[in-house]
Length: 136
Image (cartoon, rainbow, N blue to C red; front, side):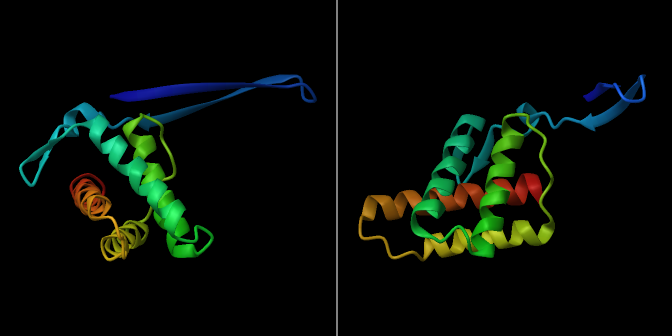
């Protein structure tokens, strides 16, 4: 599905009307979801909740001013926006790789609560699969 936006801008100084046509291809998330990950059916709603949890975890436990975490957060937020139909600047392949590396750090994070540790493991598995299937 192609979406064409026409942006109109009236320039008062030059007294002329200008416009630009921007064409973008919208990814239909209904064609991607639901996906099967390790026998579990993941809907777009579950994917949104999972990436939101990962973003919250990174913000809570890591320093978001460090470049690797900043890039990972950018990737996760970009994916979230794509789920919502919002077009962002697409992360590079290196950005995606770094985001997956941060997921590995989350898996190895020393969490005292076993339930939280299991939830982190599950969230990381889902995020990795979504990134590998849909974005790499």
